[in-house]
Image 1 (cartoon, one colour):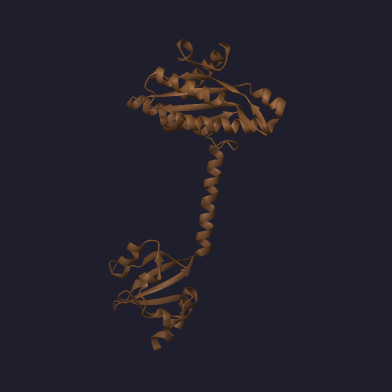
Image 2 (cartoon, rainbow, N blue to C red):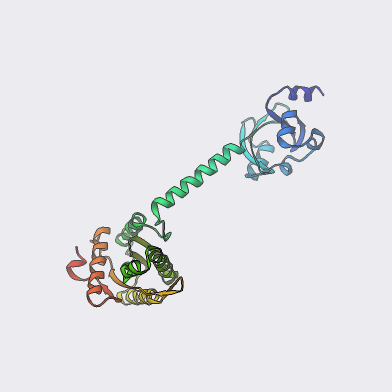
Length: 289
């Protein structure tokens, strides 16, 4: 009884554990754990605490850490608890508990906010695709792999044909619907090829295709992209029609991110001059720019 009275004078929630079993618990611990003393005493500590690191809890209770204080975070009925273990000379463990639920919730909210901000900074708000910044970063990584390991890839610069007339006739909401559906179709066609679909802005998209073995394979993919985009898009009872012209650049050792994008962009304009709805591979001076 004196032991219990001594613990009750401690303002911190405290339990005593002997050979893995709760021996005593003070009033503050009962309040925090929402259990009465009779229920707690004799209870297996591991069973009571839905610990997020069960192995560490078992090690702490086994005395593996001897006299060192061990800090763990446990979960109980949705409450996050900080546990600080200290071993007594008699082999018992005195464990101080602190409710850190609000702290953990605030930390999780901060992490979620940071993740959202990172996503907003690197993705297009309308389509959810990677934006120019993230696309350039991934293209730079692909280029480094190509220069170091001979990794092959291709850059496809896609510009929609007839998009302005959609905006002019049906309004910007219709234009947004077209852009969203275009993004979805590009991603579906890319499918298992591996790579990135990004929106640069306006009606310009870039597809970075990994493992591009030759011009024929890349050209075949470009044709599938053109075929997917030209299919009618339903919008408020209307059937909207756009197409796309695609410029392709396959990197050489001397290429940079800027030169690859410039070459693909120039090839795209060549495709438009040929009559739109087709693709062109960058060659000659445009590719070496």
